Length: 251
Length: 275
Ligand SMILES: Nc1ncnc2c1ncn2[C@@H]1O[C@H](COP(=O)(O)OP(=O)(O)OP(=O)(O)O)[C@@H](O)[C@H]1O
Ligand SMILES: [Mg+2]
Image: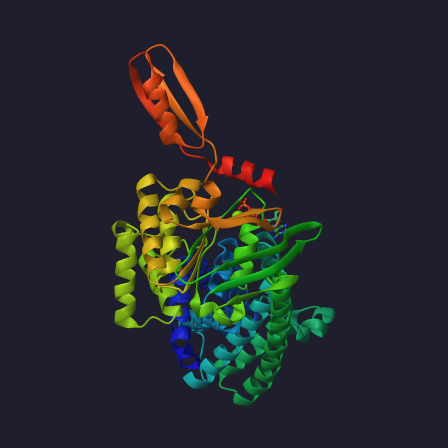
């Protein structure tokens, strides 16, 4: 019955939130590690950059570790296969789309919370100057989390095992964030790297979040547009991939 | 309630199902038996809508399996539970997704937990429970919403005798309310206890179908008498008469009497021979 849909979604969101919170290891380490690295690296960035050294340290680490958090999305989907619960859930009135929404929403909230905490930490402890409004920063954080989530679901549809997922996430996260200017400010990178940087979603994330913190709404909007487009493409790919996977299953 | 006609399903060169036909009426328990790889699990997966058959058709209450998931309860052969949540959370999740509301849901969870004796560990994590305890939770999750068609795929694998009895009781009660049950097992006495009709599958096909009494009638059991210094075994299709004769003819004091009922093996052999 269609009227049951909101109740089912609420159940699924609650259930998946429980699953995430009972297995918090990754989330905690992806929160603590960037904090430590921000503190360790901020003197270096401050010395290297006349302006914006703190923002580089905070936003750079935030982007790198939020990309690493992608593995949480992938793991969440893969373990359902290992536990055989994915098929078990399909023998209930729940549809695949409902299941994916039920999984994605809690992870989205966790990503937003993670990044918000890191920005607050950056402002309070690393002394990053914040000129942007809370609303502007939160919108930027939400856009980036959406793009990450879509990429994560698309990845989970392609990889077959936890080992593959870990490899893709680690290599992918470092490449995306390094090329995107999360580690070295873009202006200091070699010319070839500067040329390919915009191909990395990390580049747009760093640009957007730095602009949000600096209160430059126009720049936020431009980068957000790119990230929404990337997220949409990844989302469509994920749906196609998962649809095909279901057909294979039913053979 | 369940009607499967001429199902065909291949995995590459393997014909898992090859013209598999089986029906179950409301209130009927069908005991589905057959050797490993006979196609029992494949059949359950097709009825659940997890697999699409290459040929034939299935109707659940007149509907395609995908459209009948609300009527269905499945306890898969392998444990399919979330290890980090508790049995109570598991039952509330599956009951809720199947449409039970607050108070109704609470009551259903308590009832099935008591019936299957999982009350003691309702609030421990599923992952730390023993194999047999997990089995009970899995069966409870399949039954919490009182499905009109219940599919139990080897629900008693690895459970102790007491749990087996309570499970059989719950299944019997459930069928009495008008539900159709397909019960897969490798253990024949369970089916006689359930009062189930029997379907024997072999190489992806049901080769014998009927009431337990009919199929088991005439199968040889065995009467065994033990004396102080020797043992007498006599195969028989009429244990009562054979026992009476043996006792009358015994010349020494009898220490013990054993009647063994026909086993699943005896049934397979008889059915395969007749086929
Ligand atoms: N996913 C699969 N891929 C390939 N072959 C499969 C798959 N699932 C089942 N089979 C094959 O199909 C046949 C029927 O398997 P099925 O699991 O239905 O048997 P079963 O009667 O449930 O056996 P058991 O008593 O061991 O549980 C077997 O030969 C099996 O190897
Ligand atoms: Mg099986």
